[in-house]
Length: 227
Image (tube, rainbow, N blue to C red; front, top):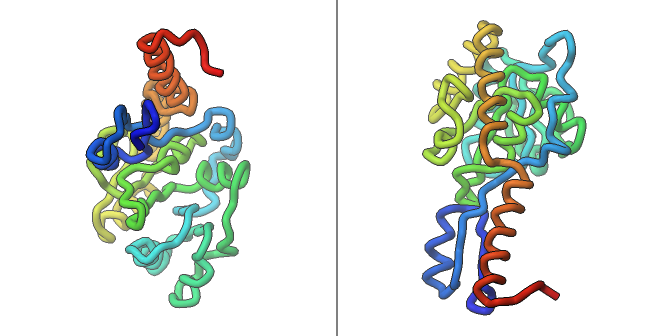
């Protein structure tokens, strides 16, 4: 860590640990989305929903299985895709409506942009409180329904630009309300997209952040260019 001029870390809680370990410069470089890949191009023109909720991401042994089970038991249609879900499905009686393997690219965008609720869970293994997936859901034209953390709520206003939940009951109420109120759902979806575009969340914004540090460091060291 001490051998490098600067470090850009994905998670804010790692900044302090890097500094304590002797890093000279540490800055939070948070999750981002790629506007070239994550666009609302796959939204169905007739406004039809292909499912009530969807989650695309790996399975881990937290409460995400319980959340999906609760939604399905309430009669809601849920799409789940991602690594390790095939094993999780065998331990549950819920029908997850289709294959469980990972999806990427246009299919990823198509699913998240055409469901009532685009679900986002945070990895407890990685101690995440924010992730790229949340931004990607909004970027493709979906409606973000996300685990509640302080960091998540700092990016979108709850109930106005996205929906956050802290319990199974709250998640169920959100998805059912959204399914029954398409007008409000569309209002929140559009507000979330506008908020995303106003923020500094793209991969270009992250590149500018790193480049700013590089240019300042070169100037301090009176170096004209990097070989």
